[in-house]
Every structure is written in C-alpha cells, then in structure tokens.
Image 1 (cartoon, helix red, strand yellow):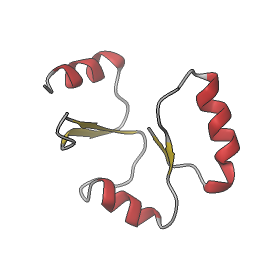
Image 2: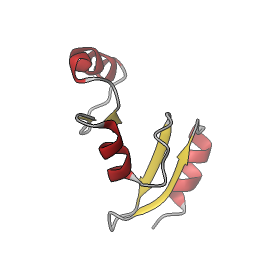
Image 3: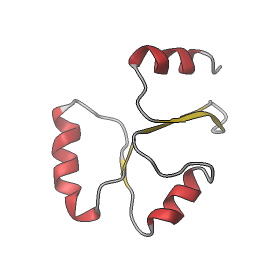
Image 4: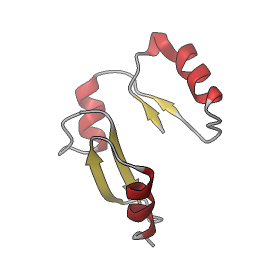
Length: 81
C-alpha cells in the first residue's frame, strides 16, 4: 500500500490505516511526485485511485487507473499465478 498524501499528513494516514485494520507494510510517497509516478509506471498519469498488481516474480502484471470493485480486483489477482 502506498499513500500519495503529503509527508506532513503522516499521522493522519496512520490513524486512517489503523482504523481500517491495515496491518501490512505501507509507504508514504515523498519527494518529487513525477519521479514517484514514473518510478511506479511511466504509463501511469498519476491519477488516483490506481491499482497495480504484481506477480510472485515482482513484475507488474496489471494496472488500472480509477475505481476497482472488490470482485474486479479478486478476478485480476486470481489470474496471476
């Protein structure tokens, strides 16, 4: 999970994640936004929400800008083995 919030909002981000039971590693984007965007995927416009799905080999397998339902996400993840 990567938050695109500003660094001065870190405490609010932590409260938000804790309230939703997020326990895995989470990161807060910092520095130049375009460097971050291009580092994630040069084809990504930076629009949020965005979902990036990586395979066990750590390669990007699918990504999408915009909302994604739970069912759509589950189907996309199920295709990746």
